[in-house]
Structures are given as structure tokens and as C-alpha cells.
Length: 125
Image (tube, rainbow, N blue to C red):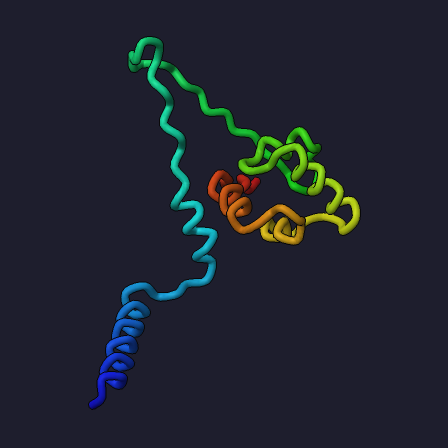
């Protein structure tokens, strides 16, 4: 067996081992983004004292009806991107998924992942 054949065999074994240890699953990107999100650590109180009281506010943002100001509450969305989202929605109609935001210039997978990580499914009534 030549050196090249041994290298190819070793690479194949490593690849197959990786597939076995880390199987591919649909929806993994969204789940990984949600799992990776960690709430920011609140800073210490005055003079480094612990015990500051923090309140985390949650608000619902509907991509299909939100104003620019409401869209700016989403992580990674500033004034410019919020304006582009509203403009895109007016030209193309309602969004069917958060992934539809990828069609907007300036919004990449990183922004979508941050939005997904900070979101919770709507409560069913």
C-alpha cells in the first residue's frame, strides 16, 4: 500500500467516524443557534457589589406587521435593516419564515441565527 493510499484510507476512516459520532439531522442549524444562545451576564452592582436586580423584558415581534421601531428590538437589527425589512415586506408580501429574511441585503445567517436564538415559539391558543 502506497503512502497516498494510506492517507486516503485514514481520511476516509476519520470522515466515517465523524459521520457516525455526529449524525446529520434536519433543522440542526436553527436548533444549534437556539442552544448556543446564552443570556448576557448582568454586571455587578455599584462598587462591584452583587445583588443588583435585573428584569428581562420579553416582547412579541410579528415580522409581518411590526413597525421599524418594533423590528429594532430584534437582536442584530438596527435602523437600516429594519427599514429594509419593512420595504421588502411591502414589495414582496408577508414572510412565511424567519429564513425569508435572508433575501434582504445585509441580513445573513448570523443575524437570522441571533433572531432564532432569542425567539420562543408562540403560545398556541
